[in-house]
Length: 111
Image: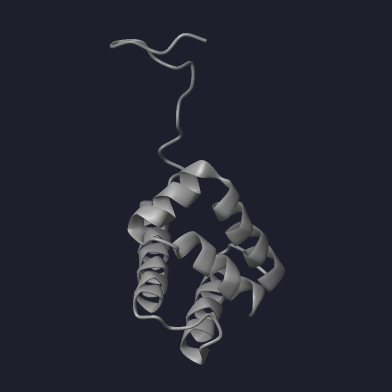
């Protein structure tokens, strides 16, 4: 498939009426808060089994569950493992803080 050039369009429309911007913003704010906190723990040398780190992760999982994203501890471990294997997600996390993708996984594996 050739890339789109200026003026070309995909044969697809997004139903913008179905998009809940407030909900999307709420989830994005939580994701940023969570990742910023985890990056801070890592930068500060807080170990994966520190109760503050464990609580931060469990609060995030609780938030997800309370906001329509059912997530078990096992689901979270699988997600963090995916982050270390996927170039895009690993790069995004590692750009925020070197070692973050791996730190997330080690913490998840020890919940």
